[in-house]
Length: 112
Image (cartoon, rainbow, N blue to C red; front, side, top):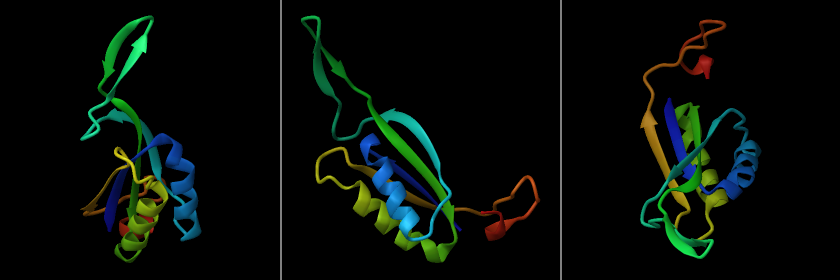
């Protein structure tokens, strides 16, 4: 099993959700986060004063999938989230040792 964490632009969430749904992936956790990378925020003017907005709103998706589904999921996320502009985000893939469904006590891939 692998865990996919993707940081994307908020307006791309529906596109990514639909792309994952189209390949049979339904479950995911979504969090509203803030961050910056090379984008380094931007400046705005409020009531005549200029200030820097360092942390930009982003969406973090988390999915735990069986190994065979990971490659397709990563490709679907990357394609759906891409705008071609700075700040499109990142995708991280890491190994998951085990998963346990609390309600039924199923373990491993059956719990996912």
